[in-house]
Length: 614
Ligand code: F6R
Image 1 (cartoon, rainbow, N blue to C red):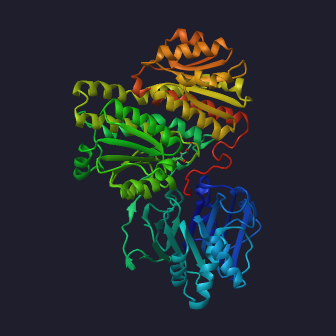
Image 2 (cartoon, helix red, strand yellow; image 1 turned 180 degrees about the vertical axis):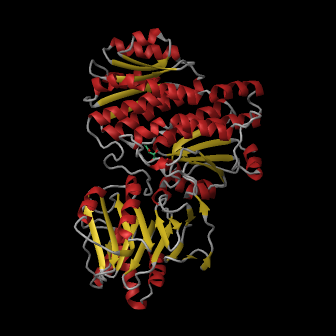
């Protein structure tokens, strides 16, 4: 949450900051701002506006700035409403230090009142302004920004990242990371720092991921990193990022979400080609011998994640119980971490996360590690905090996902978790080689099936047109498509702002059926499965009460088609693989309904892509 960027080097900093913020805007869009040292005027130049980045860009049209150091910010509001005063960067009381911040300073109120007693005046309601003023109070004594930050951060509680500079030293940026992500981009005669690598892709592929308690001193020529953990200057390894710049652009699609939906067959294809070897064995390159040995001793599994990733975890959990026959608990991270979970060395805790930075999932990981469980991160963003902190990591290789509503990352999580379950089943000999081979043969056809569904998806547009003004939707599914119902409802809620609720179809009679009347659309996810007949009975019950049935079923199911007001057919696949297909029409339905309602699909209100606060 909140995107931050810093630049120091030979280029004019303003366009660099703006280009970076464009790529970070998915992290928050309540306000945006930049601070730099104008070469001509010599002073600190601070420009910030409420609203999306576009408003700031327009404002910048009024200025000609020549600067070679600067910081920028795009905000997801925590402390204080979205307003110009609360927008970052924030400047200390002397007007010398400018700072951008991502995260929360938990003890800001106490520090603020202590500073107020020393006559420091505050112009905003933010915790950030407290942080910059605490640094400023130490800076006034030593005139050394590095020392001032080092002293101040010890007093600040919470999880956050800072990037700052002082106009007294317009060649040096300081960056500090505690839990919230920061990555340094290495250039020639220039250096960058940002909340994530997508902002750096136009300029460099060489990056250094900062670790917790790292304090970096960044000039155009040099990077020095001091660890507050070890109290020493340290060297951090640079890594090369392989993401494609084009993947982080819309490429002619009206929205990132739509583009990312259409990338799903390719994502599946690349996962399968990486994970299934020529000899038919499943392979995870990042799991070393030591971890594999540990995996063999596991007696229980937990899938821990948030939002869409939680839904992927529910599917993964069904697969882990069904194939390796291990008991598997699925929980949202925020409940798990405070639930005093019962864990020991025989537990495997799988943390599923696209960003690898979600605060609750990170806290859950730390809790699981502290209790001695083996931890495995299933992560999209390479080098992210969760990927680095877990005992082992499996990357999902979805590429950069920019749309706030997750689509291709979900697809990648599903595919990876299913392969993991099959892999563990093979190790535990709970699946025959021949059965696994047959299953993987079917799996390899999934990119093609996925492409077919996308090719035919436009037929579903009529359904969106019929119902887009409705405010309440129900989603029903059973077995491994109950999570699909939850995911379909979440997609619709988050981008169209209509109320949607996912239920296990068997639960209908225990309450929700009271909602059914002639105005209630019910999206029924009913591909061929063990419980197909039960789903049909549930659908009959909805029809008997005049409900509107929108069904997703297997092609050729005329019975289902006849009893539905709208029907979308998916190819026939084994039940456990069906969530990879059934979710696509639901993503499309949510997308179309949102567009027809004039919603901002890629940047829905109140949301941010990476939730780095609890
Ligand atoms: C919904 C969505 C969110 C995320 C959730 C977890 O479309 O994207 O629900 O799935 O915030 O984020 P990650 O996977 O980054 O931990």
